[in-house]
Image (cartoon, rainbow, N blue to C red; front, side, top):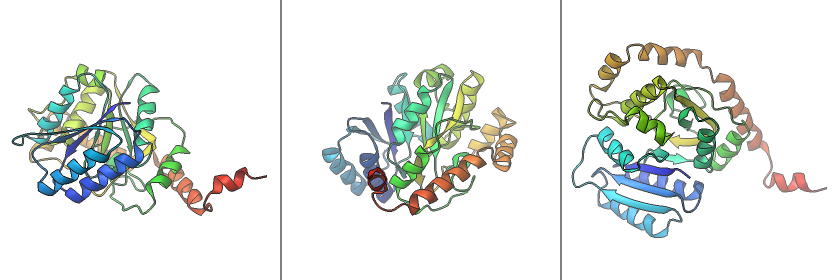
Length: 277
């Protein structure tokens, strides 16, 4: 399985929920790295310490003595992973069960895929139920995972990876030169830039429609990041605006809603009842 990299944030409640979701939805023994850019306070440190003692995952925690820029911190961690495939998961996100296996299956389905992004309720181009919007979702993560599994696996194109959660192919990342932490401060903007550079080398950024990761808010650029992105990629803003208007994954989005509604109507232990003569 890929390595899971969680850049630790300052929101302690969100971090606690993220770690609980990781335990519930990720195969035991998966390598997980909590990389703290000197963000967690005393309560956050206690949450991490307690989690490390009880998690079934193969987890490690590091903390910088002083913070650096967000993009620089994540680039430092990715470089330490060499050319391994790495899933970068926001520490305020909650992955649904099976998220990592399905991202890995998506990446393995086509060697040209450089990034695989799951659905999210705050995922911009990968957002569900409405593209480009943040919508609270009350459905249980396990039900979301079941609904996503009904969609099959076509891994359709995205304009770029999205920062709530993304699986990066290590070889493609290294070939593209990694994150440009000298030009961008935020992971949000640096990931878009990396996606576009990998696309220039023939790599695809795709939606993994069989996986879902919940989040309360979208990622955001830092001051100056979007100006830098516009100067380097003049067509980007028009392209993403057109993508959001066209919504090429509308049919998939509707199917996910239909599957979730269907599963919500099933009685408890429906599979058991269906198996009975």
